[in-house]
Length: 325
Image (cartoon, rainbow, N blue to C red; front, side):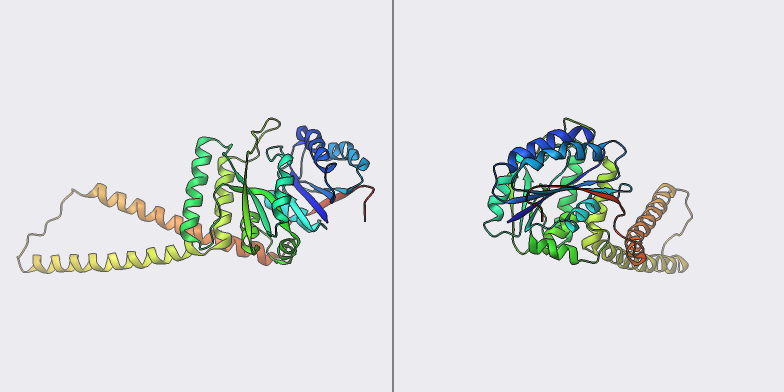
C-alpha cells in the first residue's frame, strides 16, 4: 500500500520545518510506503528552498518513496494546487491537508484506519471553526443556502483535510474541468464517504491568505460549479415580476376607466415619490444582481472554452527515498 500526502503552500516558509518533522514522526511508525507532494503555489518567500533543505530527513526512512516539490509560476488558487498534487500522485490513497499546520498530521493514522474499512472518502469535520465571528457566520449561512438549492448535501463543518481512495483520484483526474471546487468534486465522485471529527489548530505561524472577500468568491465558485439554481431563480423572479406588472396594469386601467366615468376622482399628487424612488433603486439593483449572476456562469464558460492549462509548473524537484520506484 502506497500513500500520497499532498499539501499546498503559499508563503509558508515558517511552517515547513515543523510540518515535516511532525510528518516524519508519523511516517516512521507506519508500515505503508509514503510519498509527499508539496505544491509551492507561487510563493514569494523561500518556502521551496526550505522544503528541499528540511526534506532530506525523510531519506532515513525505510518506507519513504519520494518528496516531490512542485513549484508553480504564480498563485493559481488553493483548489488548483490541490488538484495539481492529485495529478502528480501515484499512491493507492491520497491524504489532502493544509500546509499551515492547522491540520494536525497526528490525525492521519485515524483517517487511514477509517479509510481501510472501505470508504472512498474520509473527510475531517472540524470540532470548532477557527475563523472569526463574521466569517464563521458567513460559512454557516452559505451551507444553509447550499443545502436548500442543491440536492446533494455537503457537511458544513467539513474541510479539505481527509483521505481519498485511488478510484476517487482517477475519477477526479479524468474530469475535463479546469476550475474545480475540490470539496464539491470530492463529494460528487465519492460512492461512500464518512466524516471524522478532529480539532483544527489555530494558526501560530505565518498569516492567513483567506480574507472575507476571498471566502465570498470561493463560495460563489462552489455554488456556480454545481447548480444552475441562481439562473433559474432569475427566471422565476422575472416571471413573478411580469405577473405583478400585468395585474398592476389592470388595476391602473380599471382606475382610469372609473375616473373617466366620474366614479372616482383621479388626481395627480406629489406624495408617493419616495416609494417610487425606492422601487426604481430596488429594480436597478436587482437587474445588476441578475446580470452579475449570469456573468458568473458566462465567465466559467469563457474560462473552460479557452482550454488553458489549470496551472503552469515552473519546475519540479524530487528527493528520493530508499523505497523509490
